[in-house]
Image (cartoon, rainbow, N blue to C red):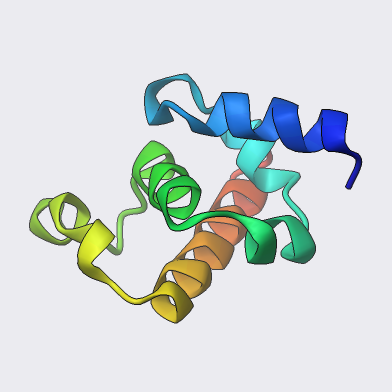
Length: 84
């Protein structure tokens, strides 16, 4: 990933409210792996997958990095299956 692309991704990931499902659907496994914990949390919160309760979503930042990456991959899959 180029530094410009990384900068664009970081800007988009700063606020889950502005994150689009089409952006999440296009994330590569490498991009997910390189995300910070905060970026992973924002991806998960932006998609708000049905398999996560509101309580779990509020406390998502307490999860370990491995689980956050797994959840980000599931969110990406959900977005792709919805046609984004």
